[in-house]
Length: 255
Image 1 (cartoon, rainbow, N blue to C red):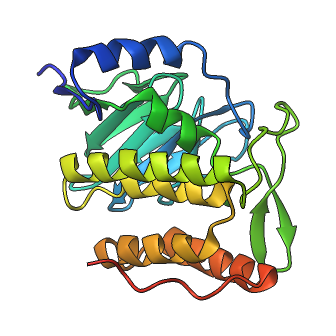
Image 2: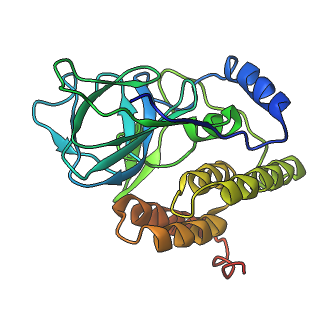
């Protein structure tokens, strides 16, 4: 069966796709381990992974975990794994049983697999992928430093820090507003249980230290995925950042 393909434009008309595709060619990797290739954006079931360069035994996959080249994922029956590749915005949804290996920009079934299933493939707009690539978020398998029990992002040794406007500047506020407009449009197009648009906006808010607003977005994400440990940890991190910076409690959820 051929892979199902769907292009998410998040813009007006096909001209935007051409513009986004051109921009994608010039997007540098930001705040990533040099081997980071993607991100787990959806997960269900007992999925495991192993990377020969890092570990001997398989480990459980975590939601919003960084994916690295050479990772081998094993999906038992009834399980699901969704991977977003940073290089090209390719978002694959695999259903078990299957065993796959992560590459630079796509996954391939492991050699010897019998009649492997093919993934559903969406192509995300480069504007979204770029933000999620360099988001200042403490994620499983990130290049991190530790502060107490809270993981916080450290600068990549391979990539210089990204220059951004000061969080309280007018330029920063304009960028946040533009990102929110993009997010709301994407949110309207996406399935109700898809939190990828929320994760995109979460990264923007983290970049500009908008921690109370991050808590509000994370509350909405947890309503969709109440058992997801990574989201709970991100909320605890955002709350700790709010407290240390003296920011007010998050605004009530919007109707």
